[in-house]
Amino acid sequence: MTRPARVDTVESTEALLAAFDEQARTEPASPPAGVWYDRDGPLRRVVGEERGFISAPRDTGARGAELDRLIARQRDYFAGRGEAVEWKTYDYDEPADLPARLRAAGFAPEDAETVVVALTADIAAEPVLPPGVVLRQVTAGADMHRIAAMESQAWGEDRSWTGEHLIRELAATPGDLIVLTAEAGSQVASAGWLRFQPGTQFAGLWGGATLSEWRGRGIYRALVARRAQLAAARGFRYLQVDASSDSAPILRRLGFQPIATTTPYVWTPRHPPDRRQWRLAVVRRVTWARTGLRAQAAHRPPREGDRRRGA
Image 1 (tube, rainbow, N blue to C red):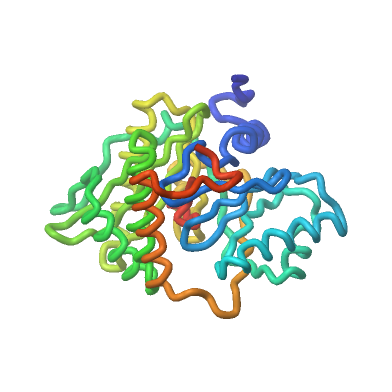
Image 2 (tube, rainbow, N blue to C red):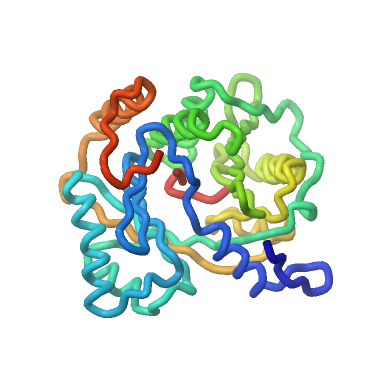
């Protein structure tokens, strides 16, 4: 694998973007139980999560009416399932009118995030925590539900699906996901997870929500430092984050470089399915997958994003 050029002790932005584009804009080879991939030309649909996801290269090769038809097929595919779908765009994607064409097809932009990258070795450090707070690596389903409850409180919306997704992903790829909590007594104050991308030089930081009463006390920075330590121990050269407007300034102060912005475009059906019914469907799919009773439909190879909030 060719290493990007370096400028003094810092990777050039162009080299970082080239490495990110080549290695990190792909889905894991193995989806979690109950999730599958479906190909449509240059696109990969991720199906079976709370909402669909379109994994696209920087340039699909489609233009004009052909691109409109490609977009419409994704919308109609998930409309047929009664599900919302996200098409994740980057500011360097081609053609330049892709966002306008997504909007014309009924997709609405969500908050933009900044893609930031750093050399793992520059970020890895012993975490410094406020008194009474400890970091734990967790794997139990009960802990994933505790994380989801914390995220629901921090975001002010139902994030129960986060716990279910983490449970499924840990079951599917336990060696490629590490979940950490920052806890004060019995309270989860913050949580973040680290996704390794096998075959690449990148590890991704995700999650990162912190309860309001614990913000500004160094917990988020401690989670970043510890995850960087774990990534360094595994030999991953780069850390990557899709950073919110809250976390991007912190990450830049720590040494992360912005290389792009990313905007999710989401199409939502007029009458989305009840979340409780969706959760029941997930349980059924996982049960079928584990017992071998699930039918093997075409284009479902033998996997992620908490949609895909950065740390």
